[in-house]
Image (cartoon, rainbow, N blue to C red; front, top):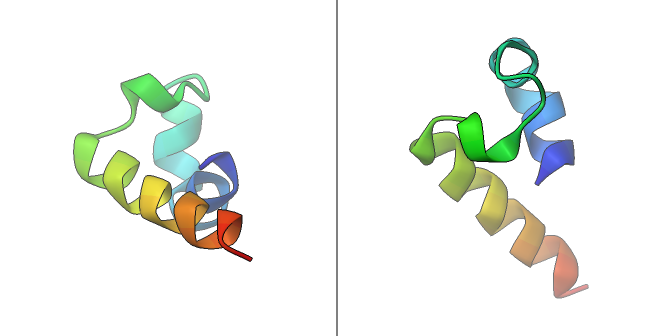
Length: 41
């Protein structure tokens, strides 16, 4: 999840202190889907 957020939403992720639970819910869901896709490899 962190990889997705660092790549796609670096400013927002930094503003939250790099805490996934503080990221907007929509971004969390996208990052979770990305992480799940990587886990399937």
